[in-house]
Image 1 (cartoon, rainbow, N blue to C red):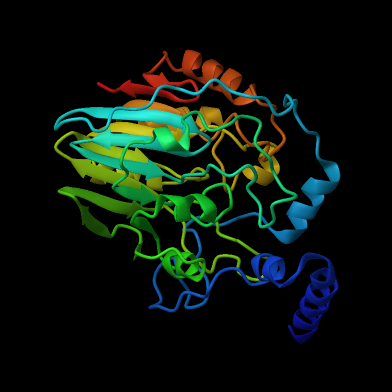
Image 2 (image 1 turned 60 degrees about the vertical axis):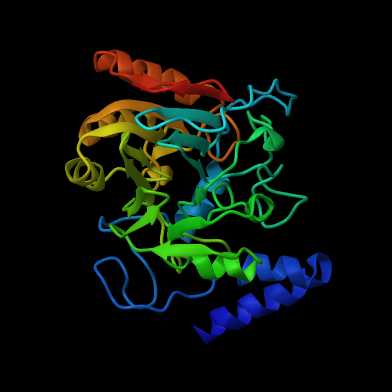
Length: 344
Protein backbone atom coordinates (compact mmCIF):
# COMPACT_ATOMS: atom_id res chain seq x y z
CA UNK A 1 0.00 0.00 0.00
CA UNK A 2 2.81 2.42 0.84
CA UNK A 3 4.50 1.65 -2.48
CA UNK A 4 1.26 2.28 -4.35
CA UNK A 5 0.79 5.62 -2.58
CA UNK A 6 4.37 6.66 -3.33
CA UNK A 7 3.97 5.63 -6.98
CA UNK A 8 0.73 7.60 -7.33
CA UNK A 9 2.32 10.62 -5.67
CA UNK A 10 5.35 10.47 -7.96
CA UNK A 11 3.10 10.19 -11.00
CA UNK A 12 1.05 13.15 -9.79
CA UNK A 13 4.17 15.28 -9.40
CA UNK A 14 5.45 14.32 -12.87
CA UNK A 15 2.16 14.98 -14.62
CA UNK A 16 1.55 18.07 -12.53
CA UNK A 17 4.36 19.91 -14.25
CA UNK A 18 2.44 19.61 -17.50
CA UNK A 19 -1.19 19.79 -16.38
CA UNK A 20 -1.25 21.98 -13.30
CA UNK A 21 -2.79 21.62 -9.86
CA UNK A 22 -6.44 21.74 -10.93
CA UNK A 23 -6.04 18.92 -13.42
CA UNK A 24 -4.14 16.85 -10.86
CA UNK A 25 -6.94 17.22 -8.33
CA UNK A 26 -9.43 16.05 -10.93
CA UNK A 27 -7.38 13.07 -12.09
CA UNK A 28 -6.05 11.77 -8.78
CA UNK A 29 -8.20 12.99 -5.88
CA UNK A 30 -11.63 13.83 -7.27
CA UNK A 31 -14.28 12.41 -4.91
CA UNK A 32 -14.53 12.87 -1.15
CA UNK A 33 -14.98 9.63 0.78
CA UNK A 34 -18.49 8.80 1.98
CA UNK A 35 -18.64 8.16 5.73
CA UNK A 36 -21.72 6.33 6.85
CA UNK A 37 -23.14 3.15 8.34
CA UNK A 38 -22.23 -0.25 6.93
CA UNK A 39 -24.99 -1.75 4.78
CA UNK A 40 -25.54 -4.57 2.31
CA UNK A 41 -23.89 -2.41 -0.37
CA UNK A 42 -21.38 -0.36 1.70
CA UNK A 43 -18.53 -1.92 3.69
CA UNK A 44 -17.58 1.24 5.56
CA UNK A 45 -15.03 2.24 2.92
CA UNK A 46 -16.49 1.56 -0.51
CA UNK A 47 -19.82 0.82 -2.13
CA UNK A 48 -20.38 -2.44 -3.99
CA UNK A 49 -22.97 -4.25 -6.07
CA UNK A 50 -25.07 -7.12 -4.83
CA UNK A 51 -23.82 -9.27 -7.73
CA UNK A 52 -20.27 -10.55 -7.86
CA UNK A 53 -17.84 -9.64 -10.61
CA UNK A 54 -16.82 -6.33 -12.08
CA UNK A 55 -14.34 -4.46 -14.18
CA UNK A 56 -10.79 -4.36 -12.82
CA UNK A 57 -7.70 -2.33 -13.61
CA UNK A 58 -6.17 -5.40 -15.24
CA UNK A 59 -9.18 -6.06 -17.46
CA UNK A 60 -9.27 -2.39 -18.42
CA UNK A 61 -5.64 -2.50 -19.56
CA UNK A 62 -6.32 -5.70 -21.50
CA UNK A 63 -9.27 -4.03 -23.23
CA UNK A 64 -7.21 -0.96 -24.12
CA UNK A 65 -4.48 -3.17 -25.61
CA UNK A 66 -6.89 -5.25 -27.71
CA UNK A 67 -9.58 -2.72 -28.72
CA UNK A 68 -11.38 -3.08 -32.04
CA UNK A 69 -13.23 0.20 -32.41
CA UNK A 70 -16.46 0.41 -34.32
CA UNK A 71 -17.17 3.09 -36.89
CA UNK A 72 -18.14 6.58 -35.77
CA UNK A 73 -18.42 9.55 -38.13
CA UNK A 74 -16.51 12.75 -37.60
CA UNK A 75 -17.97 15.47 -35.37
CA UNK A 76 -20.74 17.24 -37.25
CA UNK A 77 -23.28 20.01 -36.84
CA UNK A 78 -26.85 19.13 -35.92
CA UNK A 79 -30.33 20.42 -36.48
CA UNK A 80 -31.76 21.09 -33.04
CA UNK A 81 -35.14 19.87 -31.93
CA UNK A 82 -37.95 22.32 -31.13
CA UNK A 83 -38.16 23.95 -27.72
CA UNK A 84 -40.13 21.65 -25.38
CA UNK A 85 -43.36 22.89 -23.80
CA UNK A 86 -42.97 24.84 -20.58
CA UNK A 87 -44.85 22.17 -18.61
CA UNK A 88 -47.41 19.41 -19.04
CA UNK A 89 -50.48 19.02 -16.88
CA UNK A 90 -51.52 16.39 -14.38
CA UNK A 91 -51.88 12.94 -15.89
CA UNK A 92 -49.63 13.71 -18.84
CA UNK A 93 -46.15 12.35 -19.36
CA UNK A 94 -43.72 13.70 -21.96
CA UNK A 95 -40.14 12.55 -22.51
CA UNK A 96 -37.62 14.44 -24.65
CA UNK A 97 -34.43 12.62 -25.65
CA UNK A 98 -31.71 15.28 -25.71
CA UNK A 99 -29.01 12.69 -26.28
CA UNK A 100 -26.74 10.26 -24.48
CA UNK A 101 -28.34 9.92 -21.00
CA UNK A 102 -29.71 13.45 -20.95
CA UNK A 103 -33.50 13.45 -21.06
CA UNK A 104 -36.23 15.87 -20.08
CA UNK A 105 -39.05 14.21 -18.13
CA UNK A 106 -42.17 16.36 -17.86
CA UNK A 107 -45.06 15.10 -15.75
CA UNK A 108 -47.73 16.55 -13.50
CA UNK A 109 -46.45 20.11 -13.89
CA UNK A 110 -42.87 19.25 -12.81
CA UNK A 111 -39.75 19.18 -15.03
CA UNK A 112 -36.85 16.81 -14.39
CA UNK A 113 -33.55 16.70 -16.28
CA UNK A 114 -31.54 13.47 -16.12
CA UNK A 115 -27.72 13.32 -16.24
CA UNK A 116 -27.43 16.65 -18.09
CA UNK A 117 -24.34 17.02 -20.30
CA UNK A 118 -23.88 19.98 -22.65
CA UNK A 119 -20.06 20.00 -22.53
CA UNK A 120 -18.04 19.15 -25.63
CA UNK A 121 -15.99 16.46 -23.86
CA UNK A 122 -16.71 14.06 -20.98
CA UNK A 123 -13.32 14.07 -19.32
CA UNK A 124 -11.41 15.58 -16.37
CA UNK A 125 -9.60 17.86 -18.83
CA UNK A 126 -10.92 19.99 -21.69
CA UNK A 127 -8.28 19.05 -24.26
CA UNK A 128 -8.61 15.25 -24.25
CA UNK A 129 -11.10 12.48 -23.65
CA UNK A 130 -14.33 11.39 -25.37
CA UNK A 131 -15.68 14.13 -27.60
CA UNK A 132 -19.19 14.60 -28.91
CA UNK A 133 -20.14 13.19 -32.27
CA UNK A 134 -23.49 14.96 -32.00
CA UNK A 135 -24.45 18.27 -30.44
CA UNK A 136 -27.13 18.14 -27.73
CA UNK A 137 -30.49 17.67 -29.42
CA UNK A 138 -31.99 20.66 -27.58
CA UNK A 139 -30.18 23.95 -27.21
CA UNK A 140 -29.48 24.83 -23.60
CA UNK A 141 -31.30 28.15 -23.96
CA UNK A 142 -34.42 26.34 -25.23
CA UNK A 143 -34.87 24.29 -22.07
CA UNK A 144 -37.99 25.04 -20.05
CA UNK A 145 -37.64 25.91 -16.36
CA UNK A 146 -36.06 22.88 -14.69
CA UNK A 147 -37.27 21.99 -11.21
CA UNK A 148 -34.95 19.11 -10.31
CA UNK A 149 -31.87 17.45 -11.79
CA UNK A 150 -31.33 13.70 -11.36
CA UNK A 151 -27.67 12.58 -11.49
CA UNK A 152 -27.22 8.81 -11.48
CA UNK A 153 -23.48 8.59 -10.71
CA UNK A 154 -20.21 10.46 -10.95
CA UNK A 155 -18.79 9.34 -14.31
CA UNK A 156 -17.99 12.29 -16.53
CA UNK A 157 -20.57 11.36 -19.15
CA UNK A 158 -23.29 11.57 -16.47
CA UNK A 159 -22.08 14.21 -14.00
CA UNK A 160 -21.04 17.26 -16.01
CA UNK A 161 -20.00 19.93 -13.54
CA UNK A 162 -20.10 22.78 -16.05
CA UNK A 163 -23.68 21.99 -17.03
CA UNK A 164 -24.80 21.57 -13.42
CA UNK A 165 -23.31 24.95 -12.54
CA UNK A 166 -25.06 26.58 -15.49
CA UNK A 167 -28.39 25.05 -14.50
CA UNK A 168 -28.14 26.09 -10.84
CA UNK A 169 -31.02 23.78 -9.88
CA UNK A 170 -31.50 21.29 -7.00
CA UNK A 171 -29.77 17.99 -7.70
CA UNK A 172 -30.85 14.58 -6.40
CA UNK A 173 -28.15 11.91 -6.50
CA UNK A 174 -27.01 8.70 -4.76
CA UNK A 175 -24.97 8.86 -1.56
CA UNK A 176 -21.69 10.77 -1.56
CA UNK A 177 -22.23 12.70 -4.76
CA UNK A 178 -23.47 15.79 -2.94
CA UNK A 179 -20.08 16.34 -1.30
CA UNK A 180 -18.37 15.90 -4.66
CA UNK A 181 -20.61 18.49 -6.28
CA UNK A 182 -20.19 20.93 -3.38
CA UNK A 183 -16.44 20.67 -3.90
CA UNK A 184 -17.11 22.07 -7.38
CA UNK A 185 -19.34 24.87 -6.13
CA UNK A 186 -22.68 23.15 -6.81
CA UNK A 187 -24.93 23.75 -3.82
CA UNK A 188 -28.18 22.15 -2.79
CA UNK A 189 -27.42 18.58 -3.85
CA UNK A 190 -29.42 15.95 -1.95
CA UNK A 191 -27.92 12.50 -1.28
CA UNK A 192 -30.15 9.42 -1.08
CA UNK A 193 -29.39 5.76 -0.48
CA UNK A 194 -30.96 2.98 -2.52
CA UNK A 195 -34.73 2.84 -1.91
CA UNK A 196 -34.80 6.22 -0.15
CA UNK A 197 -37.46 8.70 -1.30
CA UNK A 198 -37.78 12.47 -1.23
CA UNK A 199 -40.69 14.72 -2.12
CA UNK A 200 -40.30 16.93 -5.21
CA UNK A 201 -43.03 19.53 -5.78
CA UNK A 202 -45.77 17.06 -4.96
CA UNK A 203 -44.10 14.08 -6.64
CA UNK A 204 -41.80 11.44 -5.13
CA UNK A 205 -38.26 10.67 -6.30
CA UNK A 206 -36.70 7.36 -5.20
CA UNK A 207 -33.10 6.32 -5.77
CA UNK A 208 -33.07 2.67 -6.83
CA UNK A 209 -30.25 0.15 -7.27
CA UNK A 210 -28.13 -0.31 -10.36
CA UNK A 211 -25.25 -2.67 -11.12
CA UNK A 212 -22.38 -0.35 -11.91
CA UNK A 213 -19.46 1.42 -10.21
CA UNK A 214 -18.17 4.93 -9.60
CA UNK A 215 -14.84 6.59 -10.29
CA UNK A 216 -13.95 10.15 -11.07
CA UNK A 217 -10.21 9.75 -10.58
CA UNK A 218 -7.57 7.09 -9.96
CA UNK A 219 -7.96 7.08 -6.17
CA UNK A 220 -11.72 7.25 -5.61
CA UNK A 221 -13.22 4.11 -7.13
CA UNK A 222 -16.57 3.25 -5.51
CA UNK A 223 -16.32 6.03 -2.93
CA UNK A 224 -19.68 7.41 -4.14
CA UNK A 225 -22.85 5.41 -4.76
CA UNK A 226 -24.49 4.88 -8.17
CA UNK A 227 -28.12 4.18 -9.01
CA UNK A 228 -31.23 4.89 -11.01
CA UNK A 229 -34.42 6.81 -10.19
CA UNK A 230 -38.15 6.28 -10.06
CA UNK A 231 -40.29 9.42 -10.23
CA UNK A 232 -43.83 8.83 -8.98
CA UNK A 233 -46.90 11.02 -9.24
CA UNK A 234 -50.47 11.18 -10.53
CA UNK A 235 -49.13 10.39 -14.01
CA UNK A 236 -47.66 7.10 -12.77
CA UNK A 237 -44.13 5.78 -12.20
CA UNK A 238 -41.23 6.67 -14.51
CA UNK A 239 -37.95 4.78 -14.22
CA UNK A 240 -34.57 6.15 -15.35
CA UNK A 241 -31.91 3.44 -15.15
CA UNK A 242 -28.71 5.49 -15.37
CA UNK A 243 -25.96 2.98 -16.21
CA UNK A 244 -26.38 -0.65 -15.21
CA UNK A 245 -25.34 -4.19 -15.94
CA UNK A 246 -27.89 -6.97 -15.72
CA UNK A 247 -29.15 -7.87 -12.26
CA UNK A 248 -32.13 -8.85 -10.14
CA UNK A 249 -32.77 -5.18 -9.35
CA UNK A 250 -34.80 -4.75 -12.55
CA UNK A 251 -37.42 -7.24 -11.40
CA UNK A 252 -37.35 -5.84 -7.85
CA UNK A 253 -37.95 -2.30 -9.11
CA UNK A 254 -40.79 -3.63 -11.23
CA UNK A 255 -42.36 -5.30 -8.19
CA UNK A 256 -42.04 -2.28 -5.91
CA UNK A 257 -43.28 0.30 -8.40
CA UNK A 258 -45.82 -1.61 -10.47
CA UNK A 259 -47.12 -0.45 -12.81
CA UNK A 260 -44.22 1.38 -14.46
CA UNK A 261 -45.58 3.69 -17.11
CA UNK A 262 -42.22 4.40 -18.77
CA UNK A 263 -38.67 3.06 -18.45
CA UNK A 264 -35.67 4.93 -19.84
CA UNK A 265 -33.14 2.18 -20.54
CA UNK A 266 -29.51 2.37 -21.79
CA UNK A 267 -28.64 0.48 -24.98
CA UNK A 268 -25.04 1.63 -25.65
CA UNK A 269 -21.47 1.12 -24.33
CA UNK A 270 -21.71 -2.69 -24.30
CA UNK A 271 -18.78 -4.04 -26.37
CA UNK A 272 -16.67 -6.02 -25.82
CA UNK A 273 -19.06 -8.06 -23.67
CA UNK A 274 -16.30 -9.79 -21.70
CA UNK A 275 -15.35 -6.36 -20.31
CA UNK A 276 -18.55 -4.31 -20.39
CA UNK A 277 -21.01 -6.96 -19.20
CA UNK A 278 -20.71 -6.25 -15.43
CA UNK A 279 -21.51 -2.55 -15.87
CA UNK A 280 -23.63 -2.13 -19.03
CA UNK A 281 -26.58 -4.05 -20.40
CA UNK A 282 -26.60 -4.65 -24.13
CA UNK A 283 -29.64 -3.97 -26.34
CA UNK A 284 -31.01 -7.50 -25.94
CA UNK A 285 -30.78 -7.17 -22.16
CA UNK A 286 -32.50 -3.79 -22.37
CA UNK A 287 -35.45 -5.62 -23.90
CA UNK A 288 -35.23 -8.19 -21.10
CA UNK A 289 -35.25 -5.31 -18.60
CA UNK A 290 -38.38 -3.90 -20.26
CA UNK A 291 -40.17 -7.17 -19.53
CA UNK A 292 -38.65 -7.63 -16.05
CA UNK A 293 -39.83 -4.15 -15.09
CA UNK A 294 -43.28 -4.70 -16.55
CA UNK A 295 -42.96 -1.32 -18.27
CA UNK A 296 -45.84 -0.07 -20.41
CA UNK A 297 -43.37 1.75 -22.68
CA UNK A 298 -39.57 1.88 -22.74
CA UNK A 299 -37.36 4.54 -24.31
CA UNK A 300 -33.78 3.95 -25.49
CA UNK A 301 -31.04 6.19 -24.06
CA UNK A 302 -27.22 6.18 -23.73
CA UNK A 303 -26.27 5.80 -27.38
CA UNK A 304 -25.19 7.75 -30.44
CA UNK A 305 -23.25 10.63 -28.83
CA UNK A 306 -19.92 9.56 -27.29
CA UNK A 307 -17.71 6.70 -28.52
CA UNK A 308 -17.17 5.13 -25.10
CA UNK A 309 -16.74 1.47 -26.07
CA UNK A 310 -16.13 -0.69 -29.14
CA UNK A 311 -19.49 -0.77 -30.90
CA UNK A 312 -20.05 1.64 -33.77
CA UNK A 313 -22.54 4.49 -33.66
CA UNK A 314 -25.41 2.55 -35.24
CA UNK A 315 -24.74 -0.90 -33.73
CA UNK A 316 -26.98 -0.34 -30.67
CA UNK A 317 -29.94 0.53 -32.91
CA UNK A 318 -29.38 -2.50 -35.13
CA UNK A 319 -29.04 -4.86 -32.17
CA UNK A 320 -32.09 -3.35 -30.46
CA UNK A 321 -34.13 -3.77 -33.64
CA UNK A 322 -33.15 -7.45 -33.81
CA UNK A 323 -33.95 -8.05 -30.13
CA UNK A 324 -37.35 -6.37 -30.43
CA UNK A 325 -38.19 -8.49 -33.49
CA UNK A 326 -37.24 -11.65 -31.59
CA UNK A 327 -39.55 -10.66 -28.73
CA UNK A 328 -42.67 -9.70 -30.64
CA UNK A 329 -41.97 -5.96 -31.01
CA UNK A 330 -42.86 -4.70 -27.52
CA UNK A 331 -43.39 -0.92 -27.12
CA UNK A 332 -39.76 0.21 -26.96
CA UNK A 333 -39.22 3.63 -28.53
CA UNK A 334 -36.14 5.09 -30.21
CA UNK A 335 -36.50 8.87 -30.29
CA UNK A 336 -34.48 11.12 -32.56
CA UNK A 337 -31.96 13.45 -30.93
CA UNK A 338 -34.03 16.35 -29.61
CA UNK A 339 -37.38 14.61 -30.16
CA UNK A 340 -40.06 14.85 -27.49
CA UNK A 341 -43.08 12.62 -27.29
CA UNK A 342 -46.15 12.28 -25.12
CA UNK A 343 -46.22 8.73 -23.80
CA UNK A 344 -49.37 6.62 -23.33
